[in-house]
Figure (cartoon, one colour):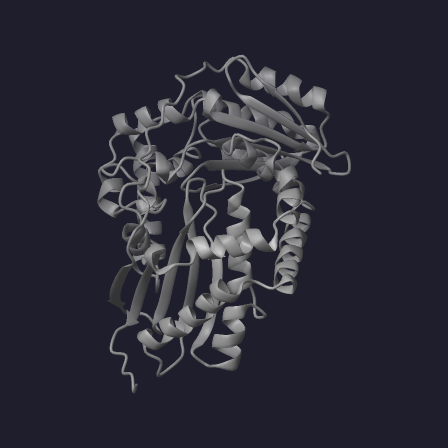
Length: 417
């Protein structure tokens, strides 16, 4: 159980304080409800570009990193389809340095052409290295476009293509900032060696005067239910053939998400899972295979992915995967498998809560879910998942009409059978 107190400033900023006197540092975590799902098809990659722009200087502070490092702090950030998270850790005695830095960039970025151009080049280089020139780097560009036809999950956080990042104009950048990077679209979490009263006092001191923005009105297209299996075959310069099969599943706002997550663990978490044991250990059809979920806020994906063993053709590999999945759907999950999956999930949750930074992030994500206490509810949700729940979920989502497959072929591969 993570103990915390919550308040909302007059400008709409949610403030959460989680005291931990055993820590020597304070975590300052600011999460904004903006990710690639908030973008439009003609201007993608903006949320991720902003992750970089937020470090390029604000109204009163030309360099973000320098004063933080002098105060003994460290920082980082990440962007997801659903939100953007900025975090720093700093010695408790220097907490106000961290709050000064975070509040000034929420108040306003420097917005100069030089900063935009520098960060644009950084993002383009990242696009090239991680997505264009990396083996299998474009997998999620292709899979998302295959699965999602209406929803903005149809492109990854880096964006659809380099051209849209290259063409980002300053007026577009300003408009994006003014719409989403506002106190009433954010949460500030202070965790560690700080009292609740001190946390609330400092939050008001540093963030209270930032003007409230217009409440964000979202109009994200709902993805229609999939009614037929989809399939894609691609070829690229990769070492070996790779197989992907994805099923639509509930999003994280729905507590059924946890049931689907456990189902993915039973199928493909670790070397003792059903898929790994049968298709890697017992029958060398894959050299590696896993099952997992994407963790999306809106309805997301349960994924089965693996690398084919030499001499195995895609048709036979998919048939082997389908055989295991169909048997699970037909006969049901046994009590022992469910208990094991629950224990793994509960252990991961407990382990994650050891670190004060993880606790801060989990509380921030509760704000994204519109349920601040979600991290404390998760253990109970997982424990209460029954065999009937897991089997009903399997029968509901592990069906061919709800599936999309991609055969990612290595060029010049010669198969014998």
